[in-house]
Image (cartoon, rainbow, N blue to C red; front, side, top):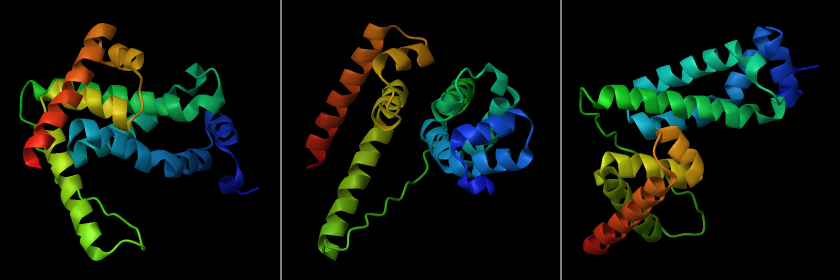
Length: 184
């Protein structure tokens, strides 16, 4: 049977026995998502690539620690997020992290080119405002709104209190609202 026809749980079982073809198939299924998750935190394409690959190697080496193969995706994402945050904290103390330009393409055949251009401008404004936030605001907001972590998970990941996490996210949202109101 082809590996592409197997579900993730079956592939992870093969990976735990050292099957390199299964590992490659798992990598192909998850690498884009994991790369993007890392990139949103570290803001450096090369660092995100390294973190993502190291995270895959770490996950394959520690598959015996995974209790339920059905949770492989979230488990791998947690490894990537933790490694990205570790890298971010380690390097943000010593250097300024450059912000990459992010291009978003809106695909909608029913909208006119004027609507697409207007949406692109709005997306760019939101990206600029998010990038202008204080680093702790930006990281918390990314983890909450983009990665989908709840307050409890974020407070655990960032090693901050639950109340502090809620306050940071609330202030970050308010800061975005105020800055966007000034732009419009």
